[in-house]
Image 1: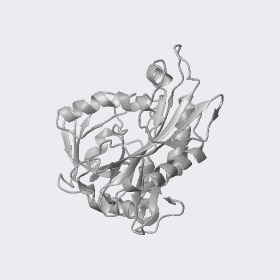
Image 2: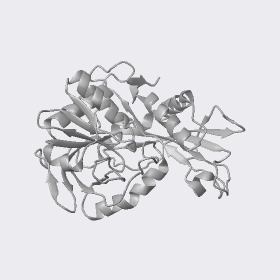
Image 3: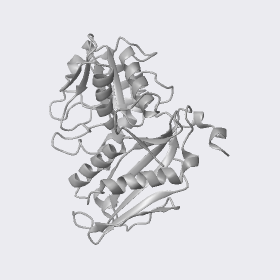
Image 4: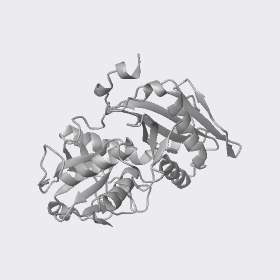
Length: 341
């Protein structure tokens, strides 16, 4: 079956194995050059560092066919740099940027039939990850590590397209002020799963996490950063040492400032300020942008003026511009689009 014959429009955001994935190992003090393999399964020691002490981290990015017919990936060098930083924080030998980019390119090139066509609304989600694969029993770094990259075709992260979602202020903390919230460690996401399931059971799409120290400032959700819009059209993004630096947010800030010529402010955002904003949105690789229509807390429900039916005008413009750049419909800033050949 050709790409055009597949039912790409009905894809969910779930794992579907593809033909090839990339594997490299760290042993005797160095990373090997890695290779493509067919087997999606992993065999490791029962005492592997990842199983005993959660020594693992991951990244996420997407491959697509653009309007120009190119097979493209968006700013993968930023993912490579973020994984490098996360590895250092977790005492994992950092995956070299060159190895990361090579692995992503080889996986995309080896699986062209799994990359959805231009205009389908779907993409090939790429998941690089690294974990302690050597055995440990005392609390210490592993002696061996495995770096893998796989892909899976996916549809929208939130069903229903660019429709506003509902959030719940979590009673739990996502990350400590001087902990690991600023790196993409697997343990951060493990800590958000219970809170996420609780939110879903109560009819909400996601959580809004507040800062753990004072519980007065907005931080992020379990997997996305926030963007707010003021009445005078200024974009405000929360600033905190425990927020993960989203590549999508970083890119949207540049789009807003340099292409849309909007004023940007990155600063701590008090929860009490939410009623003063006219738009709210989440941003991240999986969903790009998800408009937020309301936020529930124990004290009150906050409804944004844009409502629950459609995104606000600035959120829509940011989404259209960034996705247009990613699909080569709009000229991209230099270095933003990596063409896989």
